[in-house]
Length: 334
Image (cartoon, rainbow, N blue to C red):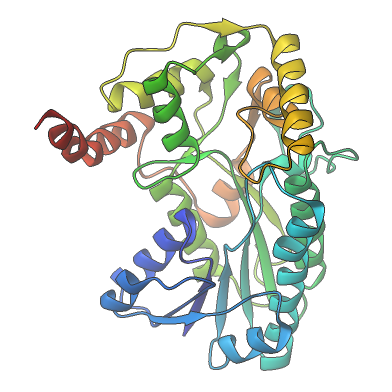
């Protein structure tokens, strides 16, 4: 039995579906119900991962865990991120040890090494950042360290750092680019010319399954962390405009200087904090820096150790995205 945490989320749901498709026994663990996965044959368990005893009960009978659950995004209190990303991961680790579960694949993020400047061709040997402008990467860095430190002869752990996952059903990057493109609020920071890595959802799933299948105590990948991307850096504007084109929207040509984007992000954070708004502001300092800098990574390690190669190209992914959005286009035209 393979447990997938966060199966109501974009990546976790896709991982669960892929495991079900290849006839693995799957248990989906998350706070909300996911009836569509139950209909596909998975066990569905609603569980707050911050409750240590509940996590042990939820993982009873499993022999592997793919831990995708996390509080993502860039807005919320540090306490919220701490509980969702650190406490929850600690509880999953402890449950694995208590129950004798031997494999844990953890979904991390390249943001743990982003110090604010350009990141170009970085490998896993690079140190984590010492300063974070958002609680998401800060708490994910702590959780990643603890997952890798837990690797031993009984429990094999591995961490993956997929970068900018996109594709059909994506409620984050893809949905926001399309929504802001439709409303005319989209801007390219610094012209969008900086090179970035991304990863199409099916490739992110492929990497997780490769890690799961090859992971065991003493395996080459045990105790290691891997960047995972398309392996084909491209100008930021090309990906953004590719997503817009898939939604039959015109390309974005409006730009904003990086310094102004950072100031606008800081101002938005202040206003949102004063007004105690719960939803994310349209821009934050962390996002402004991400948009203004290059960030692409050396993925030779995951290619060498796990045999990873992107199964779907960016062009193919954009075509699949267009096909998935076609019913929406048709409905809007009726």
